[in-house]
Image 1 (tube, rainbow, N blue to C red):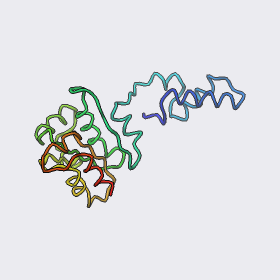
Image 2: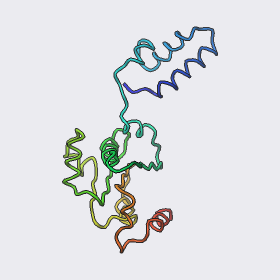
Image 3: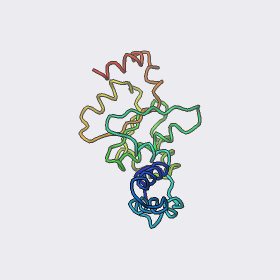
Length: 177
């Protein structure tokens, strides 16, 4: 079961409820827990649910948001991006994954390692590993898209590595027009 807000926010809600009425804090906590679908506050805080980082990010994304994921090499940025694109349908979006670093077969292996069926490639998640990936390529690829989309670009710095592509700052300017 997914909570409507993090536990600390729900606890704050209960404290405000307690202050605004003449009830004890434990009663306010239980009331908030019942609103979340639990029998009591103790059941809510001891529930086995844990949001994964991808679920946390997806819960916070609004249409038009841009999220940049940065970390040192080998810390799971690509896996997180793949998981986000695979779970995009959970928030009513189509997943896209653009990569200049990996081939489709490598991505299929990574989906399998994450516990996703590799057959979701190009059915639920559209994968593009073309050497022509650039801002214009991505823009062209998405131009006919009518569904909301979640787009992952792995990884951004490689977009301007081809000598035929303009510098990344110029590509970003072209996206804004």
